Image 1 (cartoon, rainbow, N blue to C red):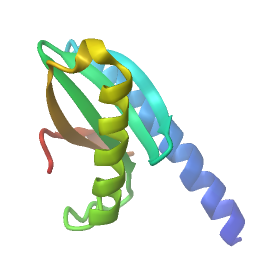
Image 2 (cartoon, helix red, strand yellow):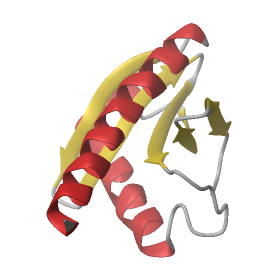
Image 3 (cartoon, rainbow, N blue to C red):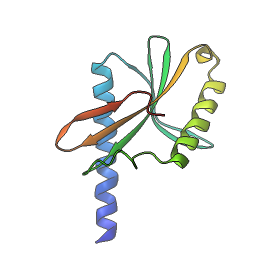
Length: 117
């Protein structure tokens, strides 16, 4: 039973990422990368809007507890991966950097937390 639950949660997470990208496109963000992998970890979405590069963590949750959706460890991993992305893409070095979170739930429109940390 536990394995089945993990599979459902994984699929829900993938669907949430698709909806998050659609939501960002509606808000005129340009998606630069999805599920970007670096030696330090993965970033769900990397987007650009105006002069900002935005690193976005997507969380799919049945119940939202704002205190635990992105841990300090995850934030460090995403920060290191963001540094790696910028260092490997010189054309983005002069852009402002921002870290956001998008929380998805089956029952409401995505909640976008701008500059979460």
